[in-house]
Amino acid sequence: MMSKKVIVIGAGFSGLSAATSLADQGYEVTVLEKNATPGGRARSFEADGYTFDMGPSWYWMPDVFESYFNKFGKSVSDYYDLVRLDPSYTVVFGENDFVDLPASLDELKALFEQWEPGSAARLDQFLEQAAYKYEVGINQLVYKPGRSVTEFMSLRLLLDVLRMDVFQSIHTHIRRFFSHEKIIKLMEFPVLFLGALPQNTPALYSLMNYADISLGTWYPLGGMYKIIEGMVQLAEEKGVSFLYNQDVKEIEVEQGIARRVRTATGMFEADVVVASADYHHVERQLLAPELRSYTEDYWDKRVMAPSCLIFYLGIGKKLSNLRHHNLFFDEDFGPHAHEIYTDPKWPAKPLFYVSAPSVTDASVAPEGCENLFVLMPVAPGLEDTEALRERYYDLIMERLEHLTKQDVRSAVVYKRTYAHRDFIADYNAFKGNAYGLANTLMQTALLKPSLKSKKVKNLYYTGQLTVPGPGVPPSLISGQVVAKEIAKEYAPGQRLPVSN
Ligand SMILES: Cc1cc2nc3c(=O)[nH]c(=O)nc-3n(C[C@H](O)[C@H](O)[C@H](O)COP(=O)(O)OP(=O)(O)OC[C@H]3O[C@@H](n4cnc5c(N)ncnc54)[C@H](O)[C@@H]3O)c2cc1C
Image (tube, rainbow, N blue to C red):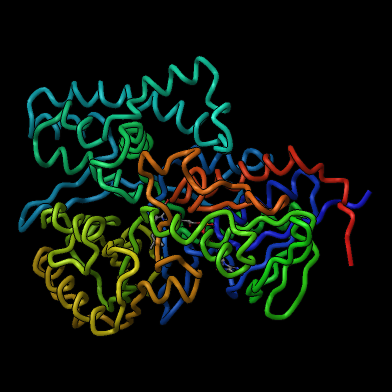
């Protein structure tokens, strides 16, 4: 019997995960990717002896990666070498005021205790609850396809959901345990990964603190792109075909069924289509208006996670006073957050983040040099010009030099900038978003854009704009969830009748 043909649009984390999961179940899978290399937002590039990861730099939730490879009888260690970072990261609060976050829980508790007596014991309590949320959240909730309320109808799960503070904000939750300003900043930081303000993020997401503090910050030697290389290798081992430089232009639909996918240079027959490219782009650009599940008004009302301005810098010398991950929280987050979420505009006094993977890994920079990835979160949908990028380059570099007490700019031997226009050109990103849809309460589970089209029977979606949400681990999970949904409706071995 001929296997069903599945076309996956896009070779980012979610597309790779869906393609591999489907091939493993016996489908004939082809991935069509518009760019010349896989990885999507997690691509990498080389320049002047430096290897830059273009997107993700934080490797959190190592269990999610391990269970992904285990599903196929493999292990992370078959594809790349992981090291745990210690300190996990550094937070710069101001001039001569910074803290290294130790990987050891006991050392972290001692640090908290110095700032706020009694906070070490409260951290234990906080983490006990957070561990429970992680267990239920990551092992049960995020693997739900979010298609029907009945998925959440088991009594145990309902009780679990109620116990998980879904309706209280993480902002309030953290303040019930801690009052010291620095502790609050540290505890609110992981929530920023979810793309919304702590005030608008359910306390369920204290599971992110568990991921940060208890599970730790890891790094794949060679860079984050090693994960992509490993996933592509595994996909190919399972029989997935990859076609690059294939910009999909249209999903051809007949009587409510997707039949073919047309790229700039070819036509591909499909029994099932999985779109892992940005949801809005697929709906607006690849489908006729009557086949779209959501209106433009719906999309306009979505809370997007931020976009960002990035500088990839090759530094022709070694720098001091920098760790692998460095958070510059020397300005108040309130006004910057307001300029991201409430009154979108380029920020007056931004917070920023610097990753220096060459601190851990000599392979990503020439000898005696430093590889820097500098990121400033910014609202999506803003005007993005060279002049603006340069203005922020000066502003950030000035602060970086001042706070780390060294000259950096004169040692820059390679520089590339990246922002909204690039996200749109490279990934067809809605409003130039970097991280997809924010994880607010009103955009959780059932309330996210559905992973199955409402109008086209055999069209599915995966990735950071659908369930379970933005970030590498959720994207990995999203691909597995969609593959499972497809298997429920289309057995791999029966082809659909193909019309001419
Ligand atoms: C700067 C940055 C930093 C980040 N940092 C972290 C981090 O530290 N840790 C973390 O966990 N997460 C991080 N994230 C988030 C994480 O990278 C993303 O959530 C994840 O990579 C999204 O994967 P995806 O498969 O949903 O989408 P994508 O990676 O965007 O994949 C979609 C793919 O579809 C392709 N495509 C688009 N249109 C078409 C078309 N018409 N035809 C064919 N192909 C098409 C795109 O080229 C792309 O390859 C970061 C993201 C960014 C941008």
